[in-house]
Amino acid sequence: MKAYERVIQLILFISAIIAILGVILITYFIINEGYPVIRKVGLLEFIAGRKWAPTRGVYGIYPMIIGSLTVTAGALILGVPVGIGCAIFLAEIAKPGIVRIVKPGIELLAGIPSVIFGLYGLTVIVPLIRKLFNNQGFSILSGSIILAIMILPTVINISESAIRSVPKDYKEASLSLGSSHWQSISNVIVPAARSGIIAGVILGMGRAIGETMAVIMIVGNSPLVPESILSSVRTLTGNIGIEMGYASGEHQQALFATGIVLFVFIMLLNIAANLIPRKVGE
Image (cartoon, rainbow, N blue to C red; front, side, top):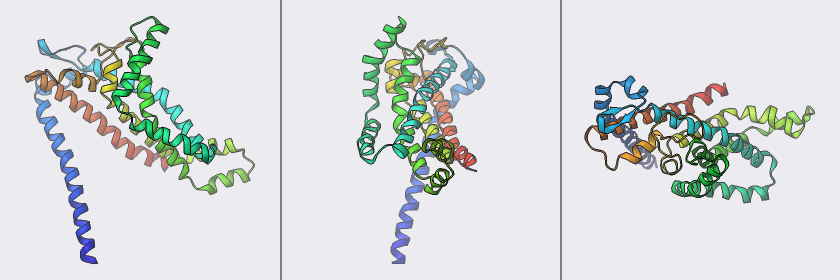
């Protein structure tokens, strides 16, 4: 039996090493391909440059960074309150019958391909914004709405699990002291679950900032610094997705360098997802 357990442990150890090795190889490949352009242009000029003109050897990704951040921020503003509210409803208010109906819908939402969200945005959200604001419709706002819908399953599922994991004694103690049901939820349960809720929000943010296909279809893809939420933008992922098909030489290296910046963003979000909830929990 002990020999069998050692074999299982060895297999799991090898699996972990393969996973880590995969991340290391991807990191090395991206840095190896993209660093020459960063070294040539300069890190500050590459990140803070406002003009992207690969045919003239000008590589500034500041507009794409702002585009990614604004679209992601809009998605969080629209999606997080809805997601947390839905999680509270499912965990503390809804009857089991309603939960059995709503939960599969949320899981189905998580399984819909991103291109379908893009098509929905292209045929419904963009025309609606065009009609309401009398503009082109392809904008930060349209991208934020679609991304807000896309991050809902992540925020809802993780937040609901965090709320359900709060010991029932907390709620019972609050009720016994004369608090109402809603007061117990808002003042006791949600604060106790805040570390898990914050983790869900951060992971939702990572989902939003890393989305490509749906965003390409509805934000307009203009490599300019946006002036308002109705402006057309291009995101970091969109920049790579649009131009990688025909890029070559230094242009292709610049797209890999864009991938390095995006990779750093995602790594920082993953680190925050592990560290911030732990600190908040303390």
